[in-house]
Length: 151
Image (tube, rainbow, N blue to C red; front, side):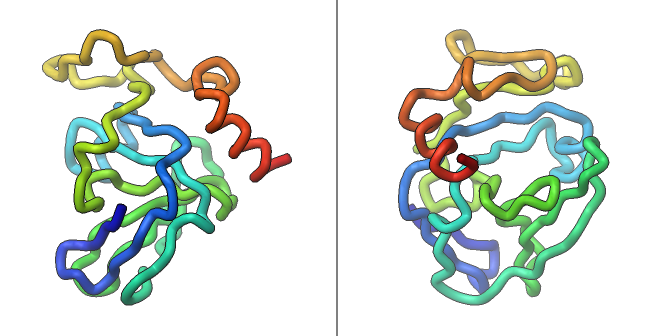
């Protein structure tokens, strides 16, 4: 699966499917995207391969207080992925930057306590008011990949 910014100055490829896909409805994601939510595919950083260009890494505040680094195209400024809390091991790839974003629907809706009231959540997809425990929601193969990454 390949992705890119709007101008095409930064192109990348995912070497595998993501660990898990979040649809985040927190106020921070709403503000950062200028939309109702952010849709992020969580994937190991070493599985995101740059094909062209290099993103600019922009340190921004986060609700946790630990900060977030957003990888943006230096030309068109599109956010391609984020890392959180100083860890560079997992990237939160913006699903809509992928060539076929429809392949990665949300596995879970998070921070639904701040969801905009006119957003309807689909039946059958887990939704939680805040965050969750990976061990209770992620599939076994994703948990194994997570253990390999963090020990």
